[in-house]
Length: 377
Image (spheres, rainbow, N blue to C red):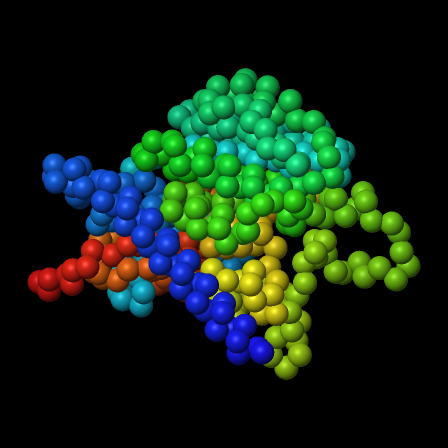
């Protein structure tokens, strides 16, 4: 029975991969006139793939988590599907387009005033002069509170509209709506999604794997402020038997690792579980006996983003400050893949050739393939 389920999951993944490849191939064919006009070598959207060039934002930190600046292309090593690539660094400054998607259901009513105060900080520390932001809120509905604007006053006004709603929290559906909004922004802009929500989904029609695939196609990097601790602190009844050291969000389950050890987000990362095979990523929700992963973890880990915790106003302010510092300190590594004939999911591995430094970057991208083997020079 177990083998039959695994085989079924494998074929479902194969069908999904074929569908994604066909979709990207159709998009590539739609750009054929531009390519014929001699625009093949133009750099496309940040975090996405053009006909020839891949761009991936990379964050480098030291062991203490501090941002590391001053590195160059020679300080990095990048492989695409295991093949070493020649990389360059794009030093241009690209303006940010951001969607701020906020859980606004009945459980977070006491939290909303803190978020409503963050408009000026987001404008100054993340968006800057040329950035723009849109705001949506979600419970069982998904509502746009403010369209894209560079005006700090409009962002502040949009956040003031936040109101608590029902008990639902359609996190996945709100994420895909945000991705669709960002997909329509100019390719010359960096596309960032900031989710302020619990790590669990309640009521969405879409699964996390479908949303993640759309985000990867659109070149969207997802960051999250996890409010699960805040919600737990105001909703959980007191209990003498409650484990105060267990800060998992509601619905999250840590699986057993080798030797019966408990797998936490840190040990999972250390064991390279963040680089799951693409076929596992596409069917992780079909094989719940292998991985039980909250959507926020999936979105941030695979898109190259990061999660922040929120329980107090100070933690929220620190999250906004840290996010702004990261976005404005990232290295934009570009390369022309030497394996364009390989269709499907391309796994990217970035290493920094300096001791005691850590990398955060996107996991990979989908590519339809050229059908041609690159010529050797």
